[in-house]
Length: 394
Image 1 (cartoon, rainbow, N blue to C red):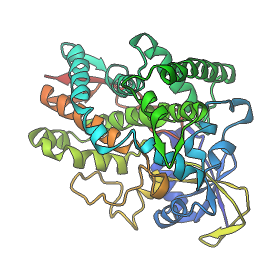
Image 2 (cartoon, helix red, strand yellow):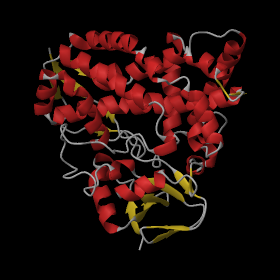
Image 3 (cartoon, helix red, strand yellow):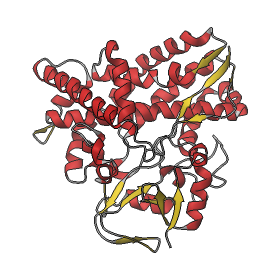
Image 4 (spheres, one colour):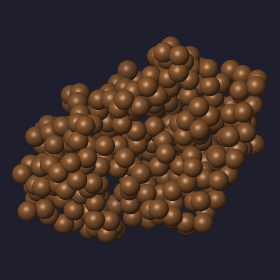
């Protein structure tokens, strides 16, 4: 029998993992209220679902967004909602802009930005690291990759926030504001795409316009859609990863001391945070036929949420999963998805988190939260601190 859980309750947003544990014990498939969407939370079921694009379509992203919030250039029309074979063609094109060599070349600039952000607050006894650190770093990196000038960064962030709000499952935000941001985004970047078509530059938009696989190129609309995906995949989730790492370090000062003494542990720290506090808590799929998961019937057309964060806390895959341990084997965690839809931006997110942590740990000897309770965002889709006031000891 499919169990029903209210995921809009405040205690769920504060600590979704206790509820995820209940859900895994209760049923292979659960119904999430108030949306009525179905969810899968056990590790093996989530893994199997992510590897089955034939029966679980990515059009679930489109169907999950309220009709009044759907608009051209929104996440509802991006590469993340495409299925094979079209998805493979487009992924092959955009992958050319995310090669390991391209990402590695960004490290000096990421380190420079990180130093500037940390030094800007280094003299303050108290700082608010969401606005001062975790938001600006990925926003600046993605904006510069796209050739967005500093004068448009505030707009860039607002468009990103409003795009995420359409996927929150709980709080859709101001409908008029979300649509307005989508229109502004489309207007601005449509103009930038046409400029690059006439006069290519050394930026990601130009690379995407020039990319070619088997004689095929991306259309202007496809580039626009991919840029919108970057707003979330390359901006919001990286902000969340860095923020979640800082929250976890303030909860585990002994880990802060260990990693500060041995910075080579930072990549392990990042991987354990990805498992323990997954930035993307869930993603969306839609069934293409009637089928069963764990003995539960799923009708054709059902929106199903693979709960990545639940799978990453499944005791059948990760022993003692609620214990934070940077020395555990995190191989197989699903924070970036799996298979053909594995996150293209994963190497960039890992690099940004690694570099920022290296800079912070070299500058600060300790971190302490000012507020005992973490103010988490109201989204069930993204796990991230809304604010994070810290005392930093230099």
